[in-house]
Image 1 (cartoon, one colour):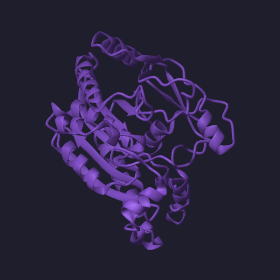
Image 2 (cartoon, one colour; image 1 turned 45 degrees about the vertical axis):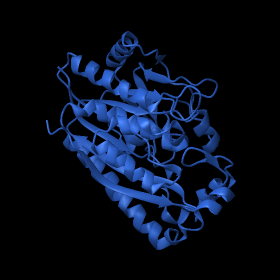
Image 3 (cartoon, helix red, strand yellow; image 1 turned 90 degrees about the horizontal axis):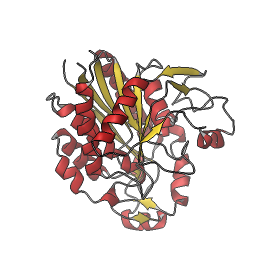
Image 4 (cartoon, helix red, strand yellow; image 1 turned 90 degrees about the vertical axis):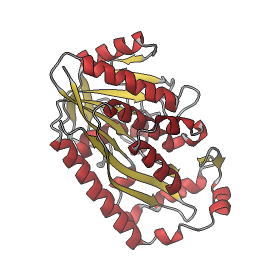
Length: 332
């Protein structure tokens, strides 16, 4: 029977591929954003600046940015090493599409049941190697999961072919002749798995876009069904469940992040679900799939290992991204 032996939650921010000298560039985008999500509501940048002052100016020096970038790199290296030590046979990768491939509709939850996954240029170097690679998914397991979730009251989208990654092509101003996978998945392949992923199942959750977002409680329940389904899979394989996404962003909230990490470490599903959904919006919504990993690993008794937590700032009002690097190793 299959065993769930490893879980991970890893950020996939583009800042992790930027030189510290370039971190402040994205601050200009934040200043133009009319709807910055922070603590259950949207703010304009002037409103945020008036509320928070210039409290984060001291973190914007090149010296500070360089130190935090080094910590992030060291944490990523340790996450990749932990993944290698776990000797994984099969992976379930939880992420989302940020209107990269789903541009005209927004499925709540989709599972990729096809065989091939493409990565490479023109995806940015932080997400992909410098050449086209084709990874193998796990259609048999994916189809089994879709059928199981349907029986348990989840109505899923069966994604059997990757759409064109139009967002990436627009940003990079170059069209690929193959369907490049969304960045939530390409980051894991490239940074954690060394461009050599095992047979795996990509799960796409609509975390960003109302009204079809699954709630935190629904993501917890998804984890329960996923756990039971994997444990009933008859193959003798070692399975990892990996969530690709960050903590608070694009407005950093260190107090909120530390509370979330404490709840994750305690397997506190009720506490996570009690937080108003307005806190889980924009990039911060990616926290929801951390709960799925928790549920999948809890039966093993694994404790959460927090490799590092690095708030990375890019404006004086505190926009940026909270980088939390954590994993659960069952020791099996």
